[in-house]
Length: 146
Picture (cartoon, rainbow, N blue to C red):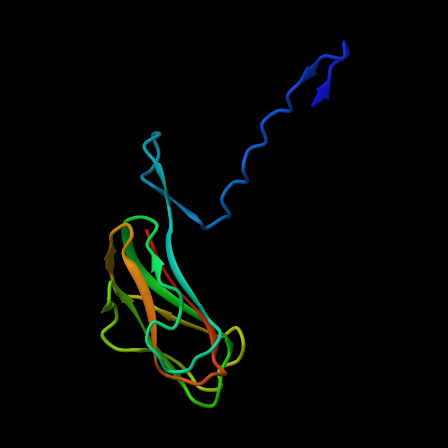
């Protein structure tokens, strides 16, 4: 509460939420006031153990419908054996072949895959399978789109 000169209590003004970080929204359209702001669609997995297995990360529901067009994997810890993984939407593999993270890659190395388009419905479930790897592997795999 804030006290006015007459000692009358008034409520504090509403504090707005922070604006989205740069790059988290896309401006579609163009000049003339016809542009709309569309949030970016992101589905991402954090993997702290790259042992072979199915559905090894969280089962992630899509927050909204959209189209995924890019995958980026960022390596935190690699191993002397490459790590191969695939992501599934509702139990069906998205990529025709596994994404391969190279053996011995340094921390911060990125593997980017583009040239695909996956239509997503709100609440589609995404999972990640590791087809080759070891417990040493740690990475993040993130799919992005609009």
